Image 1 (cartoon, helix red, strand yellow):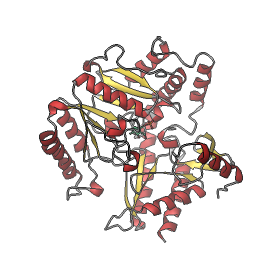
Image 2 (spheres, helix red, strand yellow):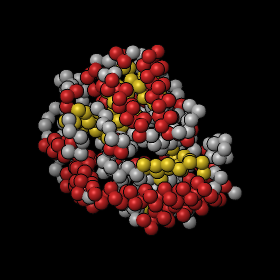
Image 3 (tube, protein in one colour):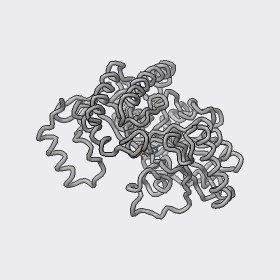
Length: 437
Ligand SMILES: Cc1ncc(COP(=O)(O)O)c(C=O)c1O
């Protein structure tokens, strides 16, 4: 049982006094250190981490020894290469290594410091390459919170309130068979209805394809509720983009870098985007954003875009160590991810059968989630109940994160021991059974 001492209370009190509010109120987690499957707070409480610290620590909390050694070694040489104006070899080498993970034809990378910046870069590249302005993204999407990416984001009104309007963006409907907006819960019918809406409404009645630069989408919708689209949807989206001279941008900031068992979640769908964005886990715990484009799209005009800290050598060293690790262990990570995902989905499936409050369970690889509802037939989201489940898990030593309206993500580090996954799922089930009472 987790104990909250005065030290924890005091830090939270001081935080609230001097920092703008960013965190949720779900639980009082004041982090101190992490190792492997565990995170520790400043009171010495130990937690199993089912959040990977918001999808960042894919291979263990605080990365692994290789990543930490690479960071330390780089700090003693040079931290900031002024990559905006000077050349430096390691960002070039990392880019070359990273491109080997992409399909043929991907040849250029842009460095930034966060996911939202990677999306900003993708917006600019799409406009520069196509000389068009309009972008399509999806309801439920989360692409970041800076003023360009926020226009694409439509996961919750709270993140946009008071900040719009956001010109040049149209939102389309993402296929969610569990909560289909089209009177069908058949995944393929739902996919076709969403594609029809784009073709017959957006591209026929709102904006001509001549004006549309890009379609931005998440191969698994993350913050929006861990929604896995039907394969047919992704294939059809690719077709619509290609037939209309529109670029397809896959935001793999959360789903990429092995989270789903493949380097890119797009590999599950058998088609490619024209531009990819990476962030979060690719940095091995350090801040990095990457925008990766097909070579034949062209180059950016001199001086059109850059940033002081892009290509930061410490972030690149950490990302390079992470990349080396996953390249060396790719086959192992793939099979481990399959096995652990099966274990998680089996247990979640049992909870779906057993508890009225569990409405849906879903996932792709190790990107899995459970959606809570007040009633299985009305599917009314169990929002307060979800907060209670997360809180109970916390006090029993398990860190969990929400997404969507009433969903909880289950994203342990890919390397988490099976026994700890089981332990975490036991804690989750216990919390669900208590909240359901
Ligand atoms: C799919 C996706 N895109 C973009 C972002 C924004 O990344 P960052 O918070 O690093 O700006 C996130 C963050 O959660 C994300 O999940």
